[in-house]
Image (cartoon, rainbow, N blue to C red; front, side, top):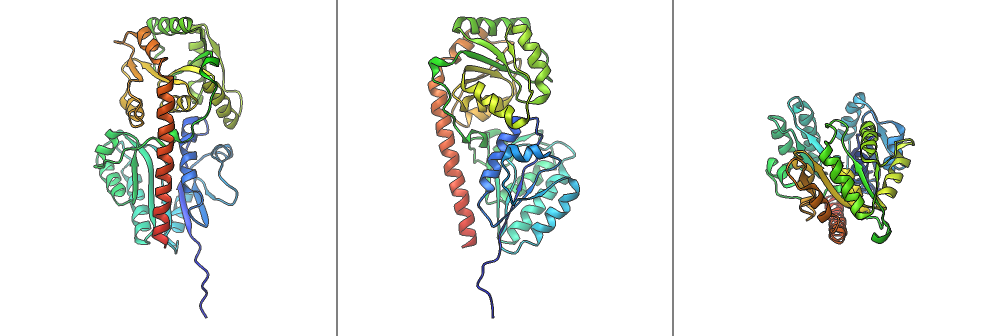
Length: 356
């Protein structure tokens, strides 16, 4: 006799990242949400991440968690021995393709080929390419073309991969209500610690903008390594410094509360501005010679002109103009979240059809 009982299905999801970076947690959580419920068994590779990382992401009980480089062989074995059309969900975010990344991209290509040979589904959530070099870019582009779903969070990355599908970064998925605009009384600042301290003209422009709008200045920490820079900025701006004093889960909740009560958030970190905009604050990148990363990611959701070069811009005028864009920001965030819901639904339908 033969059993009519269906064979168990597996979804493999990559969720690496440091617990000290709230932005990385945001997009990895989005990746996990896409993977959940697509198979009977969920297998997550988390690299060297600590237990608090699993809590940050909300990894559900029953997930088979693989840690460390030694577990990569186990990951590949489980993938190769999956019997019934496995699903592979690679993590959203930035993909470094510098020299030396070629071997890693060959492994990802091999994973993609294994899944496709098993008539499974490969999902690449919205990603951005950084530091593209050959042959890493060639291997990466080949794997993306071999995937049923390969999405890009900015047009430049799509062009590099020979693709055209540009969608919102997965971090834009969850719009928060935030406080009514008239009840917001803060201007928040969070800058990278690795960059030089802003000059006197920048400090004066931010202080002037806060005074004219009747806003208190607060510096916050979304990436642990930026904490000392936030302390220095608070001293220079005459603002309140809020250190990272809790676990990562509590820190994220505190940050969202701050963003929900702010009118303007200035940062050179993309996901600081994403989290801020989701809570209704107006996001602003104001640094010397800003990179295109933030500009392109927000352009993908239809929000243009949030970045300015501090070496050439009329900073007070720029900040005054940005604070008038609250309604536009809310509209764009709502539309981006709705688009991501549609994309996720289409992904799940692709998996369903593959297993029908």
